[in-house]
Image 1 (cartoon, helix red, strand yellow):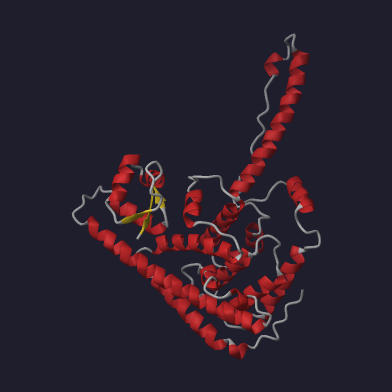
Image 2: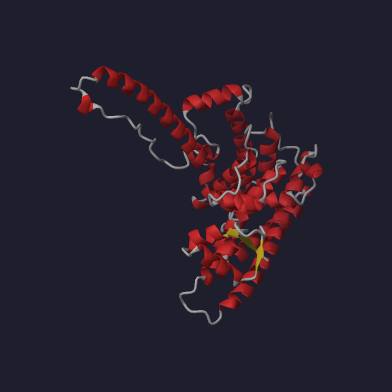
Length: 370
């Protein structure tokens, strides 16, 4: 479809754009000066991943995503959990790279799943060496066995490559990708052509302010439906665009959290100007929610830091405080892994802080900040 920006009534969007931009800049400045900057940014990654799934009509629990990210699932991960974790890893990937990387050809290819997230060699085939047995009387039998094992090794190698691609978020082998395209994907859905149309909108909005341009680009992504199975990528690109435009240079805004505060009827209105206005209001709501969450965490962290008075310098409590700030939920196994304590020591440390018990069970215990 052709996305026409000439129908957007810019004069009706200026006040909302100024309000959203001011709120996002204030949040970014507060994060930059915060003593828990890195922990808050990690927390925002989880929040945005959960909210993005909610916007798309899927429900993923925060506790399950945190444990899945730490490879400590208490149950088999669902398809929704895998998608939420991919959003989480994509946010980290965008933030770990230089500004503007997400809009380069290699960066956009990796975010779309067409390029490897980690350049690692393919697993080598575990072929059997029968050189020592060539002169034996069982040469014919070993040759037949070698052929059978070679087929098995080839199958194991392909399976390992596929599992590694799923784990790292890289592209699947070409044969597997073609089969999935023929069976699952819509044949008439030309993602490259739709992406080219979105780039045309990107070029036609160069003279607009960054915050207003971001809202139009996000609306264009939603209306063009660039990707068939990853609608959340448009919201991540909008966050990256705000970072690149110096609106939020120190963090990626959790825009999906703001979208939850805007009614669906406004976000999917037929009028183009009304949709863009709803997106600008969601940017403002995202900034307000971020500031409230930051203040809540700052007060909780200050209260926990008071308990460190008089502790010896070798105490692990300061490290536990920072871990609790950066994760919505921490389990005993996570504390053991991050702090290097024993399981009983992890439980003892958690009991010394004012933490909220999440599971309420004896075997698997997890805590969150009040």
